[in-house]
Length: 188
Image (cartoon, rainbow, N blue to C red; front, top):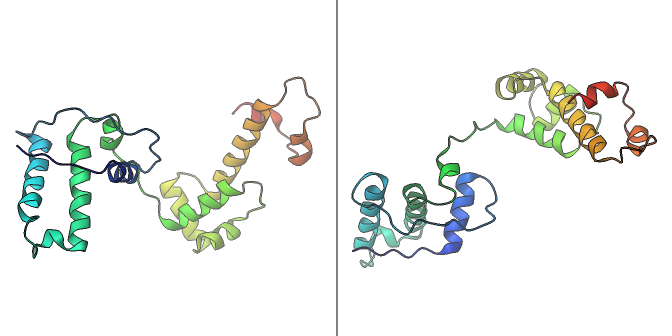
């Protein structure tokens, strides 16, 4: 029989890293893990190797660099092998990672959509040429940076209008963000 004790904070932290999102409730792990086949067996074999070497004071599993990676591997393996409340999220394919320049431009747009960005200003934020930023957006976002900016602006205005008092005809939004085509906004 093999018994493994895992710190709940370490499990929580590793789960957040794997799903790339905050985890508000601790995962409810299934009470049993089949260690006779599949991922459960692989995880149990890894745990046995670590446990067998843990009593040797000169073993690599005791070296801080190796120990940290083995701990991470054991926790990740357990999260992949056992059924729990986040298992489906964890095993779903992750969305593709956007390149850093595209991410920097998107972060700037999301943080300040009202800022009068130009393609050149966004390229400066992204630390690439305008052409390279446009190619990156086309490849990873399937639109130009300026189209993305317009989409974010329209979505924000639409959200504000939806939350406004329906009887209010003199909304501060009209003074803050003069928009000519209200039908276009409301059609979103």
